[in-house]
Image (cartoon, rainbow, N blue to C red; front, side):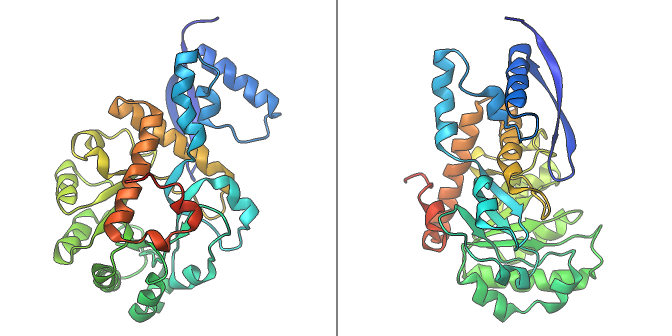
Length: 315
């Protein structure tokens, strides 16, 4: 067996960002065999790299990964995606950009995918058409709200309009507790201010870029954090965020193949495991336990697809 390590660059995420890590040469050899077997045309999972072909003691640790699918706390799907296409995505919390899009999505049969109701701060049409009554009606039917929030850098929507929409949404979910995925790009302090003024049960900060002080305040406000590979190495997720407030996300884009999601989620799990000093299997079990806690806190189990309910850990 060849010993040593090499640097491997892996393209991940919707923007194909390069992430670098060090891997033992025997794992690179294993990955090369997997790629060759798949004729270099299929998606290669990090579990293919770190999978059960290890010594007997280590292989026991990989079994829970095979038994429990990946959990993606934030992804987008085009409404035209078929159930067959979505079947390879694993368990996913799917976000929508507008009330119109939320109405187009239907729950795929026998799939662990939940659809949210959203109004993206960068979407002028969605912001202009937002109706709080219609939003509340849609929220009654789902356990998930997203994507919503504020954006002061890239949005073409006037900030006053964004804030008004955000406040109306928070008012609804303050009385209808839900997991709420919040966009806060270049608006972290504004988002925290609105959450202070209108507390909600489970705010989940998507791709959070706030300071350590802001992160601690967010934790005090009851926030969870869905961590993407671009921010997974940041020390604040180890020093300022309790593990029971962490989720994992792919930020999967509309046009990306659903089959790419498990690979992207596994990469974030790997990064967090390194950061937290635990196994990748521990991270996966952690985020499932955290989702189960959210579902209990919001009382929304019955609103989830049965296939997703079946995967939740018991109390």
